[in-house]
Length: 90
Image (cartoon, rainbow, N blue to C red; front, side, top):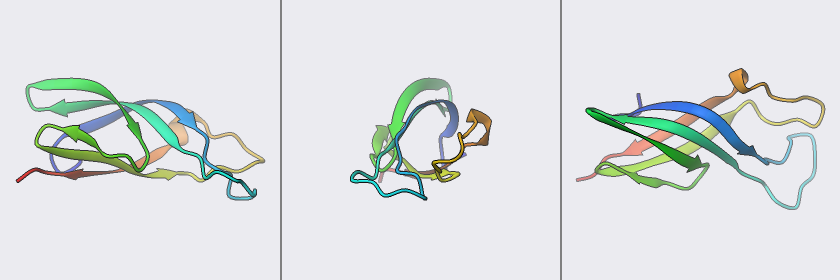
């Protein structure tokens, strides 16, 4: 639950973050597909880290992704954890 809607991550669409043990010109980004349950209805949306989207009467933002990427390992889909923030409307 994210202070209102229930958000279920479905898939990691992109994880181009700069690995923590590397130097990069671009920080990269994470995009996920998620089901957002809003009471009687639900919708599947794409969330990009740091880019809020309009949901119901507010905005939903993917604010954190764990674990950090590394050059010497691959992250299994089940190991991802996401931090989300919902800012409700007035």
